[in-house]
Image 1 (cartoon, one colour):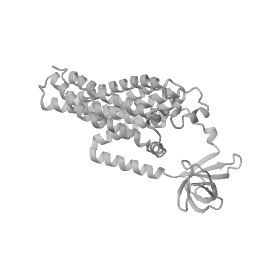
Image 2 (cartoon, rainbow, N blue to C red):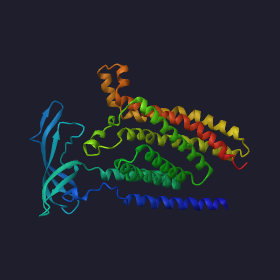
Image 3 (spheres, one colour):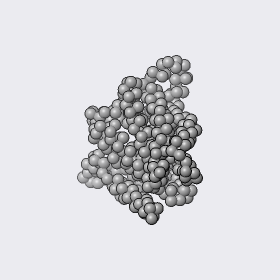
Image 4 (cartoon, one colour):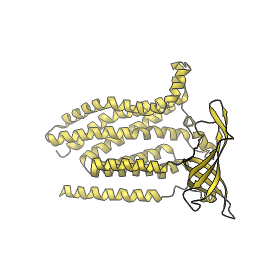
Amino acid sequence: MDRMFFKKADIYFVAFVVVASVFLWFLPTGFEKPELQKNTLRERGKVVTVDDSDLKRVGLVLTGEQKMEIEILSGEFKGRSLVASNILMGQMSVDKLFREGDDILAVLKIDGKTGEIINARAAEHYRLDIELILFALFGLFLIGYARWTGFRALLSFVFTALAIWKVLIPLFLKGIPPLPIAFLIVSVTTSVVMLLITGFTRKGAVALSGAISGVGVTTVLAILFGAWFRVPGTVKDFAEMLLYSGFYSLNLTGIFLSGIFISAAGAVMDMAMDIAASQAEIVEKHPGVSRRELVVSGFRVGQSVIGTMTTTLLFAYSGSFTFVLMVFMAQGTPMEYIFNVSYVAAEILLTLVGSFGLVLVAPLTAVLGGFIYTARR
């Protein structure tokens, strides 16, 4: 009878998350500005011809204007051919070079009175179709391999992404204190993920309690060591752009510190689930196992997993930092200087605090599992 009740509860919870995801999808962020977009259209287009005669090469970069003829492939001007421009500023990180046959995202300026196109600009290569194909393949493979569990994992992925984009980011922009709101959102999404994957089971309770405890510890460590490191939030890319956009009152350092435990939350969940699942197997095979033996077994599993998980965070964070490290090495920069540079110190803070949280979540989950799994006795 209890099993039937919890099975129905799992189905109802999946339905609830589906409804919540749909609600989040249509939830306005509060930063939509239709008045600024009414005379601007962003449509898919294709490059027909290209004129590079106005481009100039300066060292390794190109500057000037690339002119092209494009055909609009979507929207009210579909089928229209027109001339578009692409300005190259000599910044290789942002400049794009288009060729005949390329799919592009075209920005069209519309005359408010006549409704006709004033000018067109090739803004980016069009990638949405490829991104959707990749996501569809990911979803099909996940569901095909893990069936019902795969569907719930995909649902948790979508819900988490929507919660971050539709709730967390807008609240950050509105000046809500970032640390408590980030911890709340991470706790909610972690709860949804755990309950979707494990259902309303003791394994889910152990994994969830361990993960929330680990995120809490990581949050405290991020606050303490963030203050000692004295790394400002402006060390991250695009932070200054927010200030120039008029968001002067944002707590950028708090948002940066929030990003530390948000980044580590996934690895913390993995660790908690590993410990909880291993203890669940032990209890299932040996129902009479003592609380002490169960805790010790959880500790041993955690010791095996910690070694690879901490290195996983190192790979994850340093992978995006490769070019900076290459520049330092190419210039023969001393290690003492490198470790004191603010953006390097920021990555060190991310890696070590996240790893510290992983180390602590293993014993916490093992102890919690020992009490929860043997509670009936």
